[in-house]
Image 1 (tube, rainbow, N blue to C red):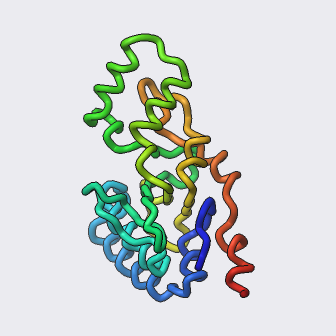
Image 2 (cartoon, rainbow, N blue to C red):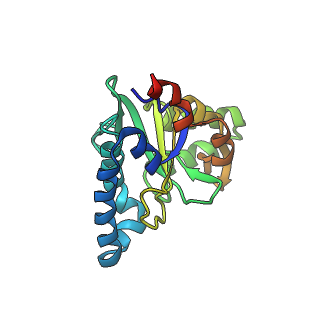
Amino acid sequence: MIDYINTSFTMREMAELNQTIDILDEWQNTVDFLNRRAKTMISNGRISHAMVSEIISQVSDYDFVVGGQGWKEPDLLYQESKHRTEQKAFIKGENKAWVAKSTFFASNPGTKPLKEWLQKRVRTEKEKKEYMVEKSYSDDDYYFLTSTAEWDGDIGSTQCIFVETELLKKYLIEEHSKGKIYCYVDLESLLKETENLVEKNKINLAA
């Protein structure tokens, strides 16, 4: 069994390890068609999210199973133990990524209670982080990050990061923009803590 925990890799590397290159190529044909006919279905992360989940699931040979997409079930379930996994997209080349729950994005419902809580009194950084960890990072065991925000549709070169929630929390950014506390993760620092998926599994695969 492939060990993905705290690793970084491309979709092609995942396909090669799982011998699912044929499935990746089939999906690439589909994505190429959509890129020609309905480009926003690929470049808009909110639209492509469900499709990326399916690609992850099938290319991983179902080490990751698609969950409920917001219906109490997590985005993905990891391996037989079915650990809850949150899927997030980032822009390739950027050094930060939004990882908080979508309720805190823009003017979504979670932003008003957060704003009111911050305005009651001056909060310490410790209090702020504890608040956001409880509200946004306490439900899931892992995070699966992909470079599919503003995606060009090249599946094979898509960058992936799969980490334990505890490791992700270590690199949350205090306040990227006003009122958005601990909503982003420092990708550069997070990547330094990961191991390449292929290198990590060389011994297991050779056995």
